[in-house]
Each structure stands twice: as structure tokens, then as C-alpha cells.
Amino acid sequence: MIKDITLGQFFPGNSVIHKLDPRVKIILAALYIAFLFVVQTAVGYAFAIAATLVFVSLTKIPLKMYLRGLKPLLFILIFTALLNVFYSTGEPLVEFWIFKITADGIKNAIFMILRIFMLVIATSMLTYTTSPIVLTNGLERLLSPLSKIKVPVHEFSMMMTIALRFIPTLLEETDKIMNAQKARGADFETGGLIKRAKALAPILIPLFISAFRRADELATAMECRCYTGSSEGRTHLVSYSMSGRDVIALIVVICMIAIAVLLNYVRFFGF
Amino acid sequence: MNPILKAENLSHVYGVGTPFEKVAIDNINLEIHENEFIGVIGRTGSGKSTLIQHLNGILRPSSGTLYYDGEDCWAKGFSRNALRFNVGLVFQYPEYQLFEETVEKDIAFGPKNMGLTQNEIEKRVAESLRFVGLDDSVRTASPFELSGGQKRRVAIAGIMAMDPKVLILDEPTAGLDPRGRDEILNKIADYRVEKKSTVILVSHNMEDISRVCSKVLVMKDSRVEMFAPVNEVFERSAELCAMGLNVPQVTRIFLSLKEKGFDVPTSIYTPKQACDAVMKLMGGGER
Image 1 (cartoon, rainbow over the protein chains, first blue to last red):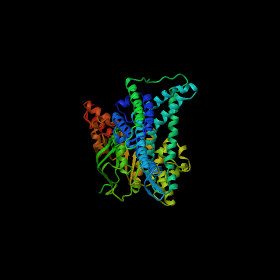
Image 2: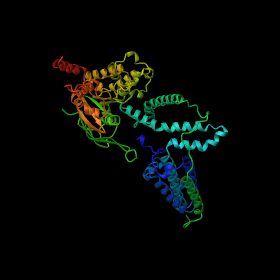
Image 3: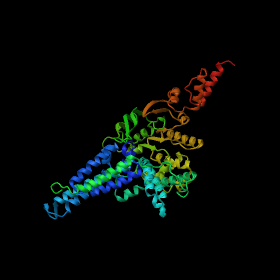
Image 4: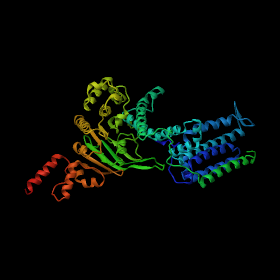
């Protein structure tokens, strides 16, 4: 069902990771992604998997939740793996017709899958442990130097906050409208492409109307509270300051990258 | 007589396996017979909406069975679409589901999905417009030009046009002014008499329920707390109050009269009964 979409969902909690400064968390996620691309060898991947599992357990969110976010990517994963297996150079292990499978190809495929797995887990970790509002707040603070060169950072972050805020609302609304039309015998599952596209009208039209209505109401409500954008020196409800915890986290991830670089020179049996 | 709808140990859990897991209805057993007019009450979050969405097969029970006319609705080969035509469900704020260019096209959406002939659809549209008390002149109007109350009526007509055996309405009078509320309620009551159908009405308004319904189903914390004829339920007014539910104004007056030491019955829920009781008290009392 539509409610089962987990990517970008926030799981409230009280873990060490939840408590990190959002600005630091965004930087950490970026560094972590860099780390995953530095890793090249089997030993390096073992290290990365171990590190990822440690971080997952620190969030106190079951691993199952992270893996659920991978389900929609399954097709892409298999596709990239197959491409890697068949399109690699090197000495072929097996050869038939125009295909040849090389040891290098298999290695690349496995590494690629592991890398995508960990990329998804790392980014999910950021959104699972940070509420969307805090996340955009952090992003706004990180990007605020850009406002010096006239980039409307505040406006962008406000738009993003609003968009994120309304995703669950609109999903819920879609669900409701779908059910209401199903109650009138609407059929969204069978028929050819054109029939299915036509069947969407009873959902999309009410959805758009209600989205516009909501936007209108929200704009009025914001104006009633004298919102004028960033022009008049707005201050923030929460101000963030880095704590010891944040510094430690940064040091740990930077050390991980250093270790990963070093591990690239350690190879077992050529992997 | 066999019940038209029967729920057996019906339970539904939202968000299984997530931190947001919530039991919405818990082990519901229920029998609804033909031609009954049932009012459903309960506080927000007591499971009313979840329960009624099971009755037309929109939601699949986590456990338990729902029978329509003796048939298991989730058995293999049972057509849920046919069930939805037989059990019409009007959602809360149904005007938000309107989408067609004209009122008549929107009302015809359900009958069209049933695969009826153009003639029959035409007849159903005219009939249901009459049921909800809308003038023929609105037929070619865009539903989005109408007033809130009129939109609501068009949406209700859209379900009535499917000619369901059971009509379920989730708070059909929410957000309407008192006059609009009474009008819609009367139309629904008239519809039931004319069509001899079963009607289930979810409402927060006790006056509404006491005025039109024959039986009341009280939900509390995902369970059925009471399911009995109206007078029997209002005899337990004190319990309803303790549950945080409203009882009709007259009932409240008689409850406080009783508290003040007057010898009056507390199962009163219509002005007529109240009048009789007061007369009896005055006649028997000292002047």
C-alpha cells in the first residue's frame, strides 16, 4: 500500500545518532558516502560493512527497517550487477555465445551491490534519525554563507520544509481519495495503459484541488503570523552548537576514511 | 433472518512491524440485519472509521472474517467490487472526491463502473438527485461551483445512485449548519424508507442519532462497548457521559433532575418523552 513507502521517513528515537547536531549529521553523511567510494578492496569492504553495522546498531532502529528501503531498488541492483558481470575486461572464467564472465566482473558486481546497499543505508540513516524539519534547518544553517551572494537560502529551505511537511499529508489524502473512488467501483489495477491513465483522473483531480486549497490556506495562515521571508532578520527557535559528541563523530568518520585509504594497499589473494 | 453483514472476531492493526503499530479495531463481533438504521458513536480514534471501511471491503482485516449475506468477503473468488456496489460507503467530507465536469457525470461515475446501460444510469442520476433534494437545474453545473452543502449532497447522491443494499455514511453532517444538517438527515431517513435499505450512520451528534436511528453501536478503545436499540443505550446515559460522549440535551436535563432528587426516568432522549415525563411529575406532585 501507499503508506508503506519508507524512504525519507523519520523514526523518532533517543539514540546517540538521533542526538547529533543536524549540520554535523549532514556532513557526516557526505563524508560517509565519500568513504564508501574510497573503499576498493575486499578488506576495505569488510571494514565498511562492519562500520555500517555498528552505526545501524547505534541508531537503535532495527536493520529490517533499513532493508525495507532497498526493496524498490531491487531491480536496479540486479540490473547493475548483471551489467558488471558481463561487461568486464580480463581473463574469462566461463564463455558462451557473446557473453563471457570474468573473475573481475563477479568481483565488481558484488562490490557494486555492497556499495549501493551501504549508500542507501547511510542516507536512510540520516532521514530515519533526523526529523524533516530539523534536517532542512540544518541544511539552511550549512548553506547560509551562500545568502551573502544573494542565494535565497532561507526561502529554499522554507519551501523544502513545507514540501517535506506535506508529503505524508498528501499521501494520506491520496489514500483517502483512492478509497473513496474504490467505494464507487473505480478500478486502478486492470486494463491497458490508456485505461489505467484515464483511471487516474478521479484521483489526480481531487488531489490537485485539495493541494491548491491547502497551499492557499497555508499562505493565509503564514501571512496572519506576519511571515515576510528572510528580509527582516528572522531568528530561529533553536540554535545549534556543536558538542563533544559531534566532534568525536567527525573524528571517527575522518579516521575511517584514512583507514580505508590505507586498506586499499592491503590485498588478500589479489582482491 | 440471516444478517446482511456479519463481523466475526474482526481485528485490524495499522503499520504492522513499525514503531507506529496501532490496533485500530480489536475482536469485533457484529450482526447487521436488513432494514436496520444503525447509529455509530464513539470518540475520535475509537475505531469507527476503520470498522466501517471493513464493511465494504476497502480494508482487509488483519484477522477475523466479514460475511456479506452469509459469504466470506475475503474468500477466493468473492468479488470485492460487487461488495462495494452492495455496501455503499460515503466517506467523511465526501465533497473532496468530486472530479467530473458536471454534477450528473460525477453522480454517474458509480453506476457507470457497475456497467449499467445509459438509460438505467440516466434514471439513477435523476432518482438520486431527488433523494438528496437537489434541483434538476444543477445537473449540468460544475460540482466545483456549488456551495459546500450542495457539494456534499452531490457526493452522497453519487453513492445512492449505485442503489446499495446497505448505505454507510461517515459523519455526513460534519461542518454543516444546523439547517443543512437536519435537511440531509431527513433526506437520508426518507431514502431508507423508500428504498427499504439498511443505513449505518456515523455521527458525533447524539441528537441526530436519537432522532433517526433504531439501534446504536457505541465504540470505545477499538471495541464495541454497546450495541442495542436506542432507548436501551440511552438508559445507560451516565455510562455514556463517563466515556466522554455526549448525550442528547434532554437526557442531560433529566440526569441532573434525577441528581437533584426528582423521581424521573433517565432514559429520555426525545422532547416528546420529556414532555410526558414532566407532565406526569407535575400531575403527581404537589402544587
